[in-house]
Image (cartoon, rainbow, N blue to C red):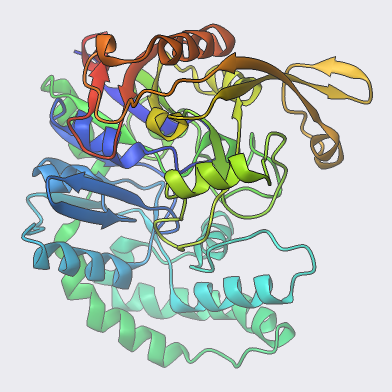
Length: 428
């Protein structure tokens, strides 16, 4: 059986949490490979709702869960999330959760810097203010504190000195007080015994489980169009969110990620600033936001809503090597008499079938729409293809044609079991 990599194929918030939770039943190990606690998954299991932003979704299923080296980790938030799940009856132990010992830490000074920059910016990026970007900056600047450093006081002291040599001038420029290195050291030493039991060489464990023939599910955060290289730069996240990062961010070789499943919402949303060609600011956009409950799991911010953009998803299919998609929130479209799908754009009078790299060009795109009839029947809770209205089936089939990838799974509500399986990714 193949391993499976799940990524968002739009701007994130596509419903990855439910699908990863659903697929965890078929996996032995679940791996998070990039991002931080700036993106969340909401899992609905019966009457219980779990909100995760750093822990892999597999922990709820009791599956071995790994936070890979590609993730930047706020250790205090991790401990808080472990505590919250414990209160909900899910006990997180080192036998269940592995934290890569070479993962980099998010520190309070990263959060300070993130928030101060965003407050001072004229053209805001729309970050969550949780320190993810500055932590990645320190990682590539080779001055980050990593999980393994928590076990070495001498290394911690030297690294804090190096870190503050960089951050102190930045803080002065932003009007922030100088950070107390001794206080940071004390905080890290107090937290270390609680975190270190989870720390192990994640790459070695993954190598062993793959050789043993166990199935691995790689869980991405955010979406492909927020990728720091391939997204709507600079309105992107600070990491690579495309499927290729599953290999680098976990320590497994490039063949390891296996089948790539792209999660796609039946319409389009994004949080924060940046271009959005199909955005709707009318009553239809309001309908999508209200019925779809489009509020960020982590931030609570309202999401911008618009028609399904096949050109964007087609681009994601190519960038990620997507073998099949999981289409979510089809039920939000119930009752709309007419539906539109963006098939491409016009840019300065010319037809264009992809999102250009230039920010100016992105802002000038005019969507080209194809209109279809909607349906009055409900699709909510449907669990088989035959339960869908005829026009809903036509809508799904047209999406498949336009994006160049089949719909492998169809989600019809937040509930785990309200899922129509066309192709099992682990069997492909």
